Image (cartoon, rainbow, N blue to C red; front, side, top):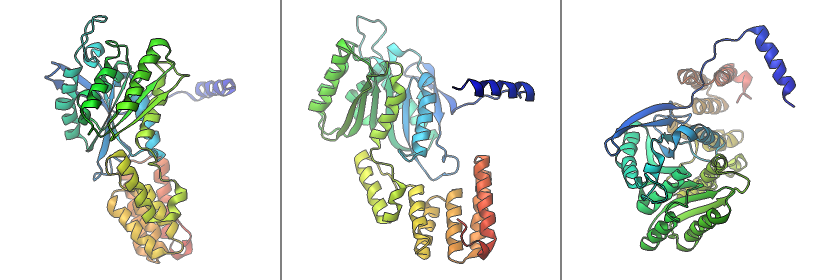
Length: 388
């Protein structure tokens, strides 16, 4: 179906000439020296779209194991979900692996040599990597750990060994056969001993059968029968996926389940500010961390008020601007509200500020063009009262 387009592309490239390719990169690579592991350890960092200009914002942090393999698709998924309003923006830290069997396994199991270093690797995370990340980047203290395969085993180990280290645990296709489903036994012991645990846990399997399926069901049943009241959890099966493909889908579902009902649909803008504040307050209680009303929601509610109650709308746009002083969108919204209230000089000032911020923070060319277009309309004055 796509062959004609591909052929056309080749013709265009050959005829027009091709410029030297530039690499496309996601995030940046950092390194920390670990005294615990006695080695240098690399990690990759994705920062959310607003990080450059929203200097007053702090973000949850997703610590992703096997970063060298999983960072690209996870960072892209996080960016897409946040842009769609399904989850809040977050920082992604992709922790590269050096010796997976050593670092991710809780015991030195006789069936496979070289294991048993999970306790030391957890100490590396808690005393070295996490402090380094939270010192360097604007974390809000809410931490998510995600691991696949042996990394999923390590994730469940952390939940059982130190539940408060992270507030959410995502274990995708965990290697439960290690030491005859040691993960299940450790979880059961922890759940029975500590009924005060407050966290979120997600486990997922692929096309398992036989003993791997039985091991997964044993872990799921432990959550079902033993999980403390404050532990939210979800067990999901992706029977059409393999062990290697399941992270693509499971990571997305896990984040959506963690931030269950976070999205504030535009259809709700007309219900007003009180409704929105209660929505985000309720989701905050579910997730276990403050989740303020989003910039998009506040702006959308103000836009709904603008035609009929321009002065009330102006107050909401001012609140949005106070919360997001470096947001081009917030300044443009304020410009529209000032224009609607007949304050054309002030509106022109705010419109120009929106254009300047779009350029200062190097927003995409299409976005910069949009702000310039809207600013020009607003600055035409009363002749463009319909400008938005």
